Image (cartoon, rainbow, N blue to C red; front, side, top):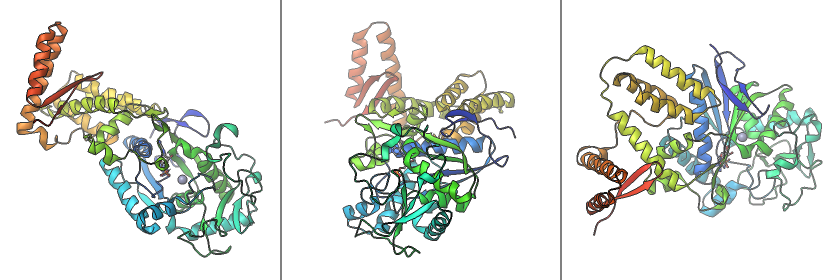
Length: 474
Ligand code: AMP
Ligand code: ZN
């Protein structure tokens, strides 16, 4: 098969043609969640975009094996080796054990994924399942001289590498997100960026989970898990590794350092990073509290897939600011799109030539560094195209394998029967009001708005069109 996908590779800092190690097969790894709290919709932006990447690869015909870890030990509140253990902190907050909260939030994460049509990875492995593998890798790193023992911990020695900053443009200043000035420098470290592979002299007396090791009872640092879990399931050669941009340093930088020192050759060819979802105050983060979750979005009346569409309309490499105004606009377009597709009769036979032509356009958009906004535009072009409904419906169904928007699923119950009639009437009134406004007949436009209101329907003008909702009537 021809390798058509081009994608931005953080390692080379350019958009490149994606060519897997074994033709037609892709070994893909994703850093999974730290399960001390619900995932916020920022985390889920990363997982939605990675899901689209995986589904694009499958759509193009690759045989993909995707592995994800679950971080249930070792991730400190700073991404380096400072601060408290996030899991222990979460357990204390909820008066539960670490394993109880790990289970609870892992389940919650996959429920959220399901609501957002994010496919379950082929392999999901919690860090606490792989302690023997971590110990083995650390032993090899010690033997090879890439690690040292100090203050009863084991550290990775970054000075042993020719190129430690391989992922980060070799610029120390621009990336020190995880290494802040206000934290104590660990006196055991030989070099500023050395990182802990194994803690035995815990700074946390109350560390809940500890294991025996050749260096005493202790627990692993955060980074080792992704190197070990990926190699356990994907071997020593990986094609593509994903995460949010905050993972570039120190997490992915350290993963490369220890993996390549361990195996003695290049490990992963492509690094795919999703930019952040921000709110008004900057990067959305779990530790800030008051986080936006899928449940919050649902409580506010949005189908979680509206959020998926919200993400698909922007490019994964650009920061994205969350706003309810934009969500309202997306909700309107999403509902219109679903109604439009459900109104297709499906009659006729699929025109294979037209189908192939639009499928190629759709693939081209995705092959252009996963341009989801263009891919969605191709869907709109299909709906306007001069072809029969059967072809349009078949294309929508096919595109949905990647877009994951339930495009050809039956509309929710409330759209049927009485509610369906109401919706049709409201749409008709909105269209009449638009005509009146266009003719500058504002009296009629206002009268229509008042009539809608008298039937409990409130309308709001947005950039994307008119949004309406049913309000409580006294
Ligand atoms: P965590 O659960 O903190 O380990 O993060 C899970 C994933 O979400 C990682 O790939 C992070 O890089 C990513 N992530 C964290 N914050 C954001 C954000 N605000 N926007 C997008 N992705 C994020
Ligand atoms: Zn990771």
